[in-house]
Length: 337
Image 1 (tube, rainbow, N blue to C red):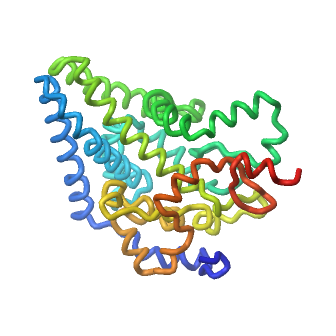
Image 2 (image 1 turned 45 degrees about the vertical axis):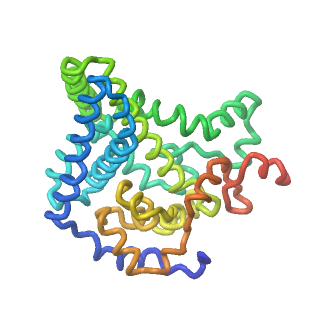
């Protein structure tokens, strides 16, 4: 869809606001229908592996996707969109953070900054995949270019990245260390409760069994989650602007994709692939995003990315300011300096 044919983003946001109200019963059901099967699968795997039935590892992808869905619920709590009550959102988010290894208050603040600065070239670095412009990349020294190429390589982003983010980075309030004790308490208390849970499981089933079951499940959720986050903003026709040309509403929808997934994947990922609507009106509960999309069918073709195309976006690495699109290193090399 041609961006010039898009409705005014501010007017569209006002129209979509009708979908913001969460249903208490529906929210409770979404939590129960995710947490119960996740706990059940993890219990089955722990007992089975302890007894020597290693075929139980076949359940890892399913448990991992359920853990990812718990993260999406935690994500909605962070936006204040899952329940009407602020306190309920807060404490559910903090509880789920124990399972997702994500300190709720820390993540909530960094994600707020991400939403507030998406597509702003002068405010990069908050919850984003680091992205340089072609000019910035050319201005780097040799070692700077080598490091950026390593960082942007799909194997690094999708291999090392998820493990670093969820196993290491989230253990401390990185980026918020001087922002107050709230974030230190969030990180350290989440660490302590998660550690207590894992130690308890280790005493019951053995440390090696607990690690063999939990780590693959966590890394499955983390890898798919990082891939989704990447595709949501790193696609050819995304949008970046300097501060003076940047507009919150326009950037929210123009800089976010609609990743077209199969229905079963939409369930596991909490419809977060409808990301352009989510960024425009972040208070819409994830289970109401399909209704919002159905009410505005023109958005189904806007910034649409297929699963096949999504894997191709992994090679995009630099923002071409002149042509206003993300390009690969090879494409950037052909551009006139």
